[in-house]
Length: 352
Image (cartoon, rainbow, N blue to C red; front, side, top):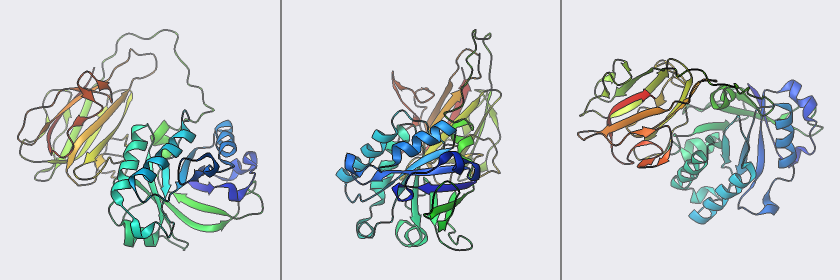
């Protein structure tokens, strides 16, 4: 996908014209702490125009965070500006300021990502090649990556979804000033919203159909045994008591699911929606590291009585935790199945 990222530097953009030449846009919402004077002066216009025209879009914030209070202020800054909006690309934190680098603390940004994702958005990290190779390294691998390297190819080998290859691009409608250009290798609009933007109205059936049954299919990969056979509904469990799970693939016979995993000692990995153990991008959730929590959400097809993903996990060598329904909280549920810091050995799942 051909994606631009823009800020007040580009001034007043003719988005009607720009739409003809791009597949998406990532818009700067501001920089630093949650102070109105640090909002990007063109953010509201840019995001409103993208919504009006159905241009898939995400946002980014230029970060100065070096401690907990500044990190929390930046989270508040982002969420204040995107509250109530539906994004088709992730929310990115821009890590490039030279004064930040000596104080870089990966744990701050992991917690930032978890808060952004808890609010219902995808989270990602933007930085240049040098930052990723020598400062960030693998510390934020649980989030999608956007790498800047102005070159004929991207030399980053740690896995990335977007490559910013120049800051001197030109796009009709974006005026005389240059614009950052990016190649995006992942269909975020399809994964995040099913390809729908704010200009698309989803029809609501006047009467629901009869109760429909949906089957869940799932399989896991463990450190000791690799990928295990597929399990359907509650006919069995996926996993073994003595071997921790590192990856999970989930599919359904109707409707759709999104799911993600939390890795031991790390954070939440991005949501996936596919069911294919050969597709490491969107076919399963996991990155080969031990999982300690799983979140699954089932989308009921139009016109059907609402169903939910019902799932539970058992720690290695332990008994099952209580059932979890979608990402609900309350009544003994905390939004996911598992306990941070404790390895998962078995999973069960059905749709009801």
